[in-house]
Length: 328
Image (cartoon, rainbow, N blue to C red; front, side, top):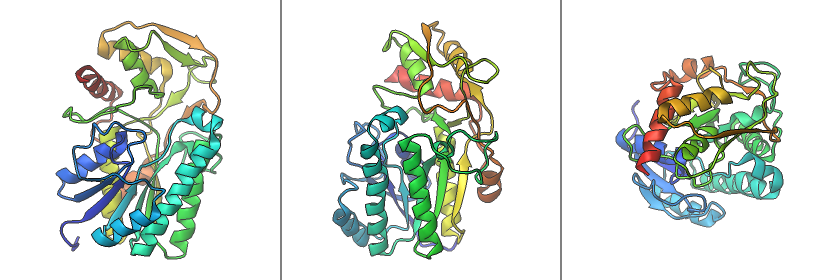
């Protein structure tokens, strides 16, 4: 690519679930990684790769000082609050962190002259899509403050890009699951809200039963349908996005999924098959903010980035997550 060597990458939230997997892959590929995390949502157990800086994103001066000293080529931004029901109960907390602290990060970047940005966005920006699979051009209509916070940042990035202030790739994640196949890192949540992790922790006996929220959705078996992506395929997408920007690519918004939907009941059945444990499942009412079906249209990321997933199998995703859970 004719780029200076090594490329220096900042990973905010790099002690967290997705950020730590991306940091590992970056280091393995020979990139220099600076991890920024305040450890508010993480134990720090996954801090195995990169140089760690215990900074809070609210500290714009500290960020600016670090950026001016290290002059990174790219900033990858993962640090955010992510629990949809909590965002409904505590919207200001989500806007302050997910939007306010992202503004401080972008301001520090601008002051230091750093112009390449990879944003950790979400399919939550779509709300309840009008058509499935959902395309990147679909209207943004989030139904939770979490989704709204991601959509707000995307609008800020678009405006900054149009003004020539930065170039970015916004990756809209669908349901991320699984763990490092080598078993070094994985999710460290003690109270997970994501279905696969919750099911596996129930199989381990950490929860007495698994709840299925809503069985009357307009889907084949009445439960919500989601598009699951392995965390290592998602990490690969981030590196491809970064290389695309560093090679002169223009700003883009891309879905990150497999374009395949699996219902809650399907996931539970597979989790029981992987673990060999017939854990208790209870059915209850719908949760606020849950769309019936959320499946990605993925042609664009394949075309723009040449994205070719390696772990496109739900059984394998659950298996890697279970191997991590058993070890930890």
